[in-house]
Image (cartoon, rainbow, N blue to C red; front, top):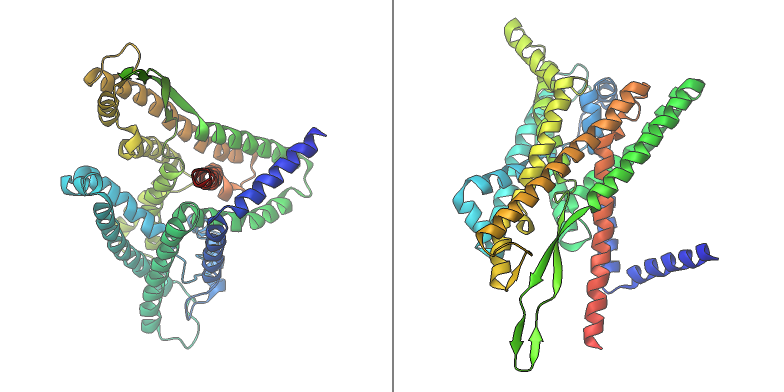
Length: 446
């Protein structure tokens, strides 16, 4: 009986979310953009021999990993082969420059919407340059790959056309992501990566079923691996929702015969304020040199010394090497701290000034600098725990896959799980926020 009541409540909540003013249109718009993105991922560039590149992708871990985040667009050498990568890389660089360059920092913090629009425009321009650079490397690698160009196609026109098509495709993906962020539900870039990962799940399941179908021992190992994946998902949800609540006391003020303030509240600081963004940023940073080095190796460099240098660098950034995971772990920890440093709600000095301005304080701590120091101490501890937890979670399923010898799920390992769960939670939370806002507006109009 209780289960039926709970099921009815779930259905009622879903119906309420669908009927909420404006939410239905936003959801339809979001799904329409995603469908358009999936359609573009199936359109190959002109003159490419897909079978040759797919055979190369099947035996190359790096290309297979990139293909997963593009939703199969890279394996098909479609016009969306570069995916959202150039835009994310450009966003990372701009956020770093915003911290370093004072004029950009002022534009972001003091100039309001106009300043943020200016930074966004610079990010787009820089993304075009990155997309063009990556397109030229990719097109040159295809040009050098034996039998990659179909018979009768002019090589020069293929090179130029491929570079232009790939650059234009990356800009279209960037535009689609921004449309989702502005007019849809959720973060557009994260959602497109989410969809790309989801699109590859049937292939991973099919490969895994083929691997374990005739081997009982491997089937037991598969159950153990799935159990680790489920535990990882639980820890990801806990990490995503966990928060440290710092108690705040408001000063009492008497106006006439009424007394205001004096209430005890708290400031919730999330254990992982960056969500999935540190993971996505770390992947973008790791994949950029790995992509360039991977394609350089396909060119068969004649200089022995230069070839050995590239070979050693490729080994460092190889997904099968220990150095890759060490660098990846360090990047996740560093980017978690960096992302927290640029989030407005995680700035100790600004929070302390606002508390002092409105007559509030932390119990037992003086307003002003002592409050800022106390908040900085609390946030440093929270960030350390959150960053290390995120890094460890990113390592465990990958190590488990190697121990169980079931590497067919490696494409949907810890990195993908964190992105999938994080984006799904953000998507649901945005729907809830929209529903609460609409209910509040309806209440005010009554």
